[in-house]
Image (cartoon, rainbow over all chains, first blue to last red; front, side, top):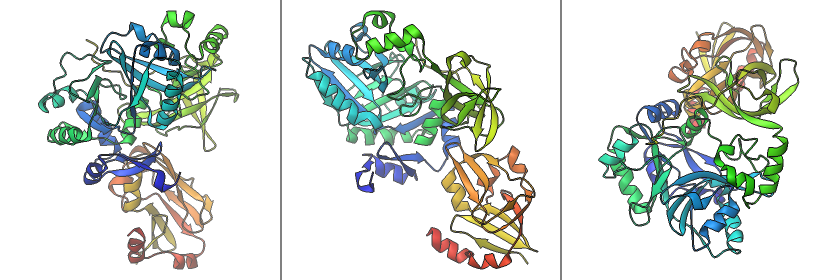
Length: 366
Length: 122
């Protein structure tokens, strides 16, 4: 990709003014860190409230009499079971049950849904949705919004001070508080928090009010990654890909039993076949011994030196205060406590299979 | 009298009596962000200019630090094992990485002085 193709956030000037260091991610120039640094930004989010610009992610509105049917075809879930304002984590699968993208779908109305998709897959997702929409009486609109996340135990209080009440909204619920706004109680840090899609002019006003509050600070993509890693959440492109199915990824909790048995979603036959024979590998949490991080791509071996799997993402967990990683191992080894070794630049580092998440989720479920 | 040199790869060397103390510059530590681990070199290891001597790891990434000249490792900064953040807080002081006995002092002539390094980072 040439520099000319790089996409820029609508609020980029605010990040520049805040002293952000930028880096490329999924075709976007993104704030990686601010002057506080990844460690402080991470810990601040867990203790207070971190403000993230996630406008690289894409919001799609799906509407029409067949909106439910379209989603039930695209995703292994039951859109009809969603109540108004309820959200579900799900995916687009290919015919082989590989994960094209992971998403959050929220029902906005009887015939309207909001889909939040990953930056790197937004174009492919849109093509996929539009191609499918041809078979249904449903419309796909890609929304032009600034998308902000405010995450952490004081996120609700900071929003309240900024004039946005969130009191009755529970985790994995979303609604449209104002015209062209979408707000959900959700996020990708393991903390209580909110994601808000809104027009740029409103976003500038909201950001200014939030940053007046000392509980709120900008947090960059580097800490977003360490937060989601500690929370055991998958990053599409690393931990889940079009070559990995939900059973191997340990994400079958997102696929309701009836849908597994009789759903007509794309990839249903392949997923049933995988479930019948059992996945050959499984996603696990990995805790390296000592302080040295073990990162994506590192090969894993068992005690006898036989290949056991590989790491798909890894780094240091500032709240866990030790290195953390996610990877895939042969199903027979995928039990917490199993001791393996990771090859880091020729050195074998002991690494234990560890339950996920590394830091407990603190969602507000009711 | 110690003399300090710099490289275009953002390292500094303080040379005294044929021994160079090597670290990364303040600019480099700012670019790397918070360090969480430093993989230190073995004592006695012989390095050629350009060999990886140390790996510094931030929360997000691992980065190689190269030998700026030929030489042999005489000391590693073991205090970084328990506190790698010294490189962030004191890059050109207590956050030094290793010491090496120079094999060929004439290689120093190819390095930058402080003014040239400052011009390099702009």
